[in-house]
Length: 592
Ligand code: FAD
Image (cartoon, rainbow, N blue to C red; front, side, top):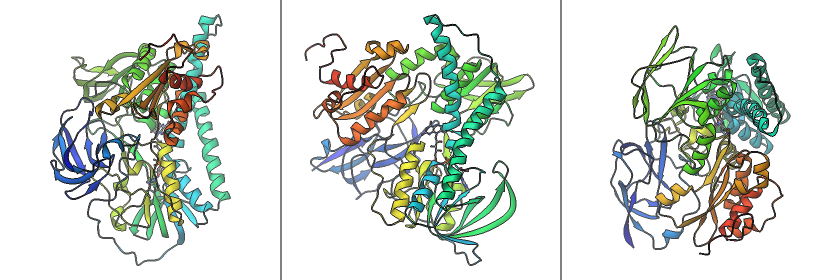
């Protein structure tokens, strides 16, 4: 046994980030990848995972302390053989808040009044997490209801998130493809954009999906209770009926009693406090309403949501500036992939202001005037026709009176849960955006199934090794598991194999020879622990790398799997061949 220091890994360009939550204390036994604490920068929160297993002997930080890369958080008495034990989990891959509740539980209230309806299972919120949980619970025989304040099921993802953004991104891709085939001798007239018809098309896509969900709820006999829910105690929720867009209430109230409850109340866009209310200043929901195509737009925040919306508006004719506090756009994937994206997208932007903050916004008759500070800041305020705030999302944990049910809510509104998605109150579960990063629909759905199955008495737990991320920009950027940067930061012995799409027949035929597929694998076992793909349909292809990681496949397994030719998907197989030196679609490789 020896004392091992657990340090803050590479967290980007921040050297003084506050600790907002601490999950361990002296005497705790921790495993590799257990979250030690949550750090919160101006842009994001991140959990710091432990790089070793053992017993905590000393905690060197407290909530409120500011730390940077290399700061020692803990000293632990390490178990002898933990060094090689880490799976392909990543800080971004494991649900950040999937930890048992560390804080003291609030004293629960007790409802002595009347009850209007009673269920085995009540799900609060009907996003991808909520409806999946409710449907699974009903399929397992539980009498189930969903409480949802919006008129339709589907939550953020279907109504104002994943689906409408992809409907618009598809149209943008078609416009761009039509331009590209000009080089192949096919000419189209400049597209005319009918914004009203495009909005209708997008709404039609949403309607198809949300209508389908309503039908599936009915078929499963899941009751949908329209309204805003607040806990009254650990077994009752009061629902205040909502109308219209979901914010107005009719005054009618109902009390619903439950044996089990799943909180799936999601998250909301962060609004910077100093930004005034003005119809020309929107968040992602406002941007998806597509009220106008502005001449010049500022995107505050260079994350995925902002860049996807920027892609749509720019293809429709808007000139873009983007301001980002970090030193690069699209945090998450390796920089080599982002570089490819940047090169393909340079034409969209007038200014990319990195390491720069928005410090003032003034709405005037002739435009929105924005003042910046930092490395890329212009000296004078800049005038915009529209400003998109996409500075992140915050969980809705503090908006549902969880304390009355005795449920612990963390400082920032995330609800801590264990691997079975239980809160500190054993019959109340929580899933989706409200339990932690990454805030993604596919994570919510998996957690939903676990919670419903556990509530129905099944043995289930959330034990996914990795959760993929995709930017559905043009080109797409998709990554899963370890990035090269993360492996390096953790001192992990890895090798990488990259297949450039310049050697893919299909990519060349499709005009996408700029892309690449990269696998990251353990240097000793050759098991795949990560992958990054940049190019059209990267998001569709990353699933193969996810499966490889979950199945413990090595590069030979992937390379010896026959992929169809000619496809972009075969680049995954070819990257695996690069890994073991057998790729015949590239010049001979140097002998090691
Ligand atoms: P939500 O979808 O947020 O649903 C929560 C629901 O609960 C809402 O319908 C809300 O009205 C309801 N609710 C909240 N409180 C109450 C209450 N007290 N009473 C009644 N109802 C309540 N993720 C991806 O994986 N892929 C993507 O491509 C993608 N694109 C996105 C694009 C945009 C523009 C945005 C904003 C998000 C995107 N996301 C994407 C993220 C994704 O939408 C979320 O991760 C996902 O919706 C989370 O699901 P959820 O079930 O946790 O919560």
